[in-house]
Amino acid sequence: MVKKLMTLGVIFVFAPMAFGQQGGGVRQLTLQECINIALQRNTSVLQAQYQSEGQDAKLLSAYGALLPTVEATGQFLYQYSKIQSGVTVGGVLIPLTATSIARRYSAGAQASYTLFDGTANIAGLNMVKSQSRSSDLSFERSKQTAVYQTTQNYLAVFNSRDQLKISEDNLKRDQRQLESIKESNSVGSASLADVYQQQALVSGDEYQLVQAKNAYDQARANMKFFLGLPVTDSIEFADSGINSNIDTTDFAAVNEKYSHIAILVEKALQARPDYEAAQETVNASKSSLTIAKAAYSPTISAFAQYGVNGPGLTSSEFSQNKAFYGGLNISLPIFNGFQTQTNIQIADVNLKSSQETLDATKRQVQLDVYKALLNLYASEKGYESAVNAVAYAKINLETAQEKYKIGSGTLLDVLTANAIYTQDLSNQVVAAYTYVQARQQVEYAIGTINY
Image (cartoon, rainbow, N blue to C red; front, side, top):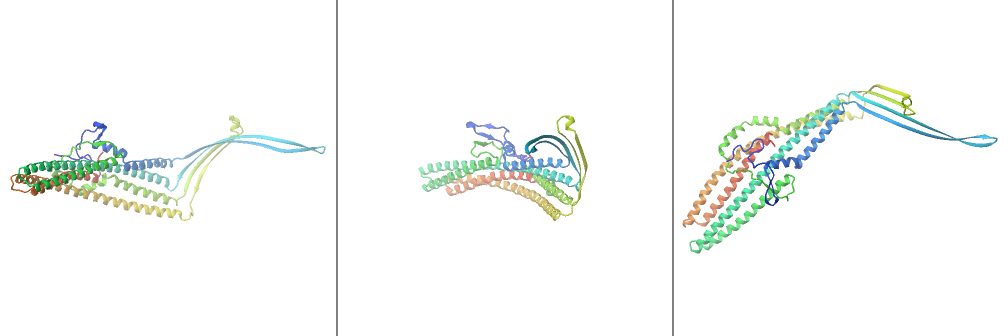
């Protein structure tokens, strides 16, 4: 019986969350451990994290653009001069060489601050804030997606495991039936054709078992690949605790919880990080347009500079000459080859594109919620139908076996009933996992999945 299968992402009861060791050094992972690994190693999550960290670095730079710039300078000048000359004495040229050495030291500091630039600096900060927030929200959604996909892959592992168990049980059942037919044939109550027919069925069961084992191994490999682990690692997955006998009396309460689609859509629009990220992208585009338009405004900045210089490093020599400058710079753009107009048009197009993306994201949220609810309701009906089919198929198989034992039925009837029963068992397992997946899909569509 499975009740309260899912609460904001963790949709069923699992084994204790700790790395376990089996014989031979095989590591065993629970669902929560798989989720933790995915959040740390999944490629999509890591890429979203790096994007978010990059935007944080830009944010620091945007804050710095609002502060004055300060620069200190220093210089040492060394000059050596050698001048060749001469004098004539009594008609004889006497060469002379004059040398001089000069040293000079200077130091200074200058600062500038933008007083007004058409609010481009403020808009630049707001743009980077929105971009940073959008990246953070995209990172958050990528983690929700990783949790959702990890759980889906985890369920796929146990679905394929249960299918393997069904194939194993079916093979054992047909092997026992083969032994019974051989015994009946030895006393003349069953034909040799029945023996051959049952042998052929057992061979088919063995092939089905190989296929089921292959599907199980591939599901585990897919799980390890998604987690960013080598597929050759010796890893098993802890029993999920899923029971294919879901309590259908819970369906009414679940349907009541998700009965108002308009409320769910509104909740999703408030909770979905990807929709909020699209909103922040629109805000960033608006700020970008403001920056482009600010290029038409004058720029006013204040500056100050102070410097000292002298021939030596002593206080009296170094400060022989002092200078201080200060003032305002005003610049007004007149013509720059239509670059400002081009930038405004590009920013306006980007704004329209981001607004369209926001609208598309809103429609996507509505579609995701609607489809998730449809899948949930369909999975409920599918599971109820599967349960009824298994109950009937089991009785039908037992009846066919009893009739065959007393000679009033044929082996074909038994084989047909067994095939139907095996398929219905498989369908019930699939329906159970489909229902559990549908429950989590609703939480993922709403954006309330936890990790």
